[in-house]
Image (tube, rainbow, N blue to C red; front, top):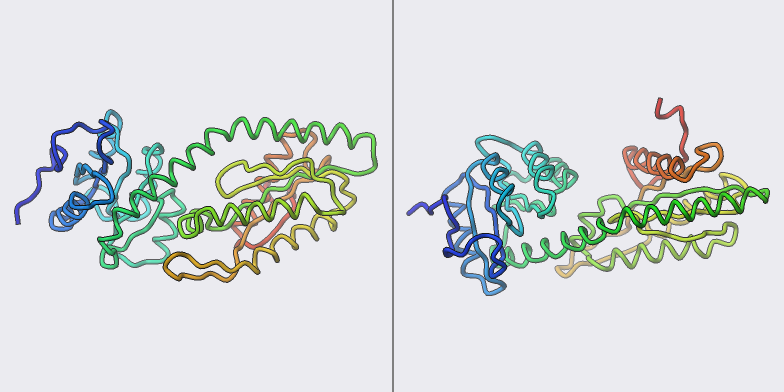
Length: 317
C-alpha cells in the first residue's frame, strides 16, 4: 500500500483556510488507518473535505499556530503522547477547533477523561461506521461553533448577572428576606448535547421555569452563563430549607426525563449538580456570591452529581 504524502494536504493543492473545503487535521501514526480515513472523507458527498496528516502531536500543535483547520481527528496513541495526556495537551492549545478522539481502546474511563478534557467525541476505531464519519465531523464543527458563540457572550452575561445580584441585595436590605445565588450544571453535558442537541436546551428552559415560578422565592432572572450551566439570583429567602426544597424539586424533575436519540439510544433521567451561596454569610458582594455558588456546584459534581450543596467555607480551607 502506498503511503500518503504527509507533508501537505492530500486532497489537492488548495491551502488550509481557503474556505472552499472543510479542513481536517488528522493526527495519526498508523499509515493504513490514516489512508482509510483520508479516502473515506475524500469520497464523501456530505461535504468537500481536505485532509492534512501529521504523525506527531507536537508537529500538529506547531502547525495550528499559523494554519487554520476546522477540526482535529486525534489518535490517542502517538509517538509523543498517549491517552488523556494527549487529549489534554491538544485541547489546551487548540481551543479554537473541535477535537474528535480516535482510539483502538474501548475504555470507559479513558473515554470519560477524554471528554472531560474537552474532546467533542470519543470514537473507537473498530466500531466507527465510516459512512457516518463525515456527518459526525460536520456536527462536531457545528456544535463547537455554537459553544464559541455562547462563550463569547459569557463575560457580558456574567456582568449583567452581577448587576442583577447587586439590585437584589439592595432591595433585600430593606426587608427581612435574604438573597441566594444558585448555579446548576448538567452532569456530562457535552455527551448529552452530542446525543440530543437542542432537546437538552429545552430541558434547561424547563428547569429555569421551575425557578421562576417557585411561589416561596422570588427569582430576579435565570441566566445561561456557559454551555450546560445556568444561574439564578433568588430573593425573599427565609431559610436554607426553602432553597433546598427547590433544588430537590429540580433534581427530581430531571430524574424523570426520558430521552431517545436518532439511533434509538435511550436515557432514563438526567442528573445535575447545584451549588448555592446565601448572602451575607457566603459573600457580601455579587462576585463573591458568584464564585462561592460556582465552587459549591463543582464540589457537588465531584461528589457524584445529582446533588445540591450550600457553600461552606470550611470545605475549602
